[in-house]
Amino acid sequence: MTKGTLDDHEGPWSEADYLALGETNHRIELLDGSLLVSPSPNDHHNEIMGNLRDSLRPAARAADLRAPLVPNIRLRAGLILIPDLAVKKGPTESFIGNATDVVLVCEVTSPSNSAMDRGHKMLAYAEAGIPWYLLVEPDFTDYASVKLTLFRLDGDAYVEHGSAEQGETLTSDLPFTLEVSTEFLLDY
Image (cartoon, rainbow, N blue to C red; front, side, top):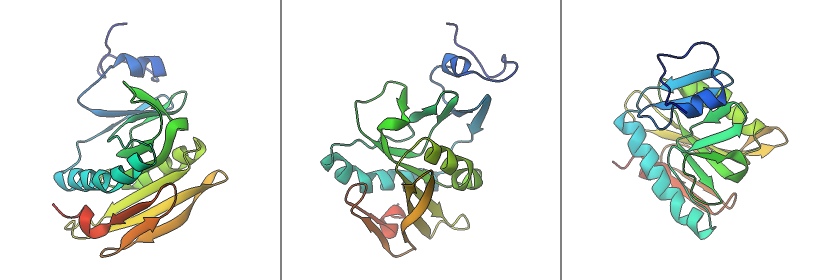
């Protein structure tokens, strides 16, 4: 298969078209025939994401889980999203993992994607049956505060399981023992 490009494609994108792009330097997601190309996140976003992984990784490993950053996750045929972080079981994937292996998906909102993370992506993760969703919402004004909301799947929708405002620590025994300090997330 010839490696494709974004410029030479016409019409809706199939999963085969998407896969033909191969690995790229862009964050490209497949949403039912359309591509979502996100700009590179800013340094604040990346620092928060790295600190989040540092917070979750020891407990995930203790539960025999992995915590990859920006993994490609197939939610269903034609829908491949790239969360900021996922906690998952199973072997390391070479390119695309399956939603059935994901225990927790995490999104750190950015000015360009906050509505998508609170809306379409949240619904898509729920429809795929991912049991837990952690939404990290920094204050975009000065990145001096962050809010955490942990959701659990209840039927086909997420309900709030716990939250933490700036200066607090989010704790939960499920999906594994976790403690995420809002102070630590902003320690950069």
